[in-house]
Length: 351
Image 1 (cartoon, one colour):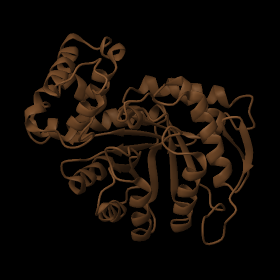
Image 2 (cartoon, rainbow, N blue to C red; image 1 turned 90 degrees about the vertical axis):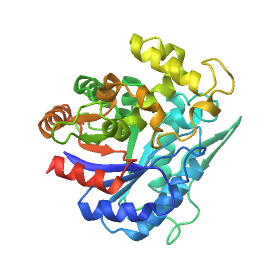
Image 3 (cartoon, rainbow, N blue to C red; image 1 turned 135 degrees about the vertical axis):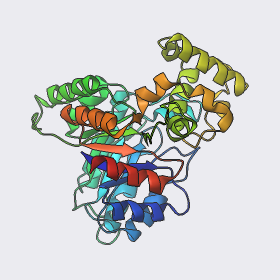
Image 4 (cartoon, rainbow, N blue to C red; image 1 turned 120 degrees about the horizontal axis):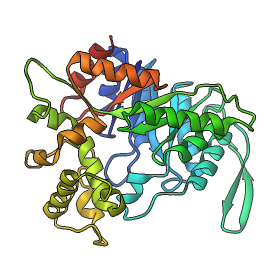
């Protein structure tokens, strides 16, 4: 199993990228959520100049955030700084859109956006539409400005399950998923991707990369699975799920009783409701940041086990092996407590 890391854009992010490269991690990713994090293209530009080997990814951008020409220019410019090391993650913009109080893009918009990015980043022309006006566009500058020669890796966020996996299959792209640690779900995604590749010019038996984003807490000695340290290390992922549930009543209704109660308490503490028009302004501040101590009680063991890896070395190796057998290629952790130490523990676990 390969290893990588996902972080939020912030000053000094390039130092983390250098450390990740020194530890032997394969990839270093930055989120694209404009209203809660810094800009990923700025951050990865710094990382590109500070590193030599590690692959650099944006996980993920969306047609609901950026136009295809602007996004392609960003990726091709990064590719000029770090030739052949760039990963373009694309998705419907679930969190980034919800932090604006808006809904994510459709799967159809995602597929059109992905196709346009693939064409432009490979130096081809593509169709661009604004209202009723349609034009063919392509890069009119090349050379030192952008790199359309070295390939960029494309991966599709699998938030919508088989529907997103089918987009990946038709576009010959990989998959990335947030907190999906169920091997059977990954097999379903890979089957959907392979089936969608049939009938296209793409090889249905090819295996573009599959990435899972999670958090990792290796228990020490007789430490409990729901210790404060375990909750702090994984709480940002659990809180992201609770935020989504608080913002999406249909999803919350499918949770267990204790999990629904955690959602209710979260809404109460944030001073909002599941139907308040401005609830996004209360739910998403500090999104994917370290949780406050007073919120530790919301980090339920059942949710920790669902979206994060918590356990002894043997426990975690068993879970990682099951994911690998289901076709996951790379384990990405999103560290918030002590990123250098958490990256080192990831390398230790997979050694």
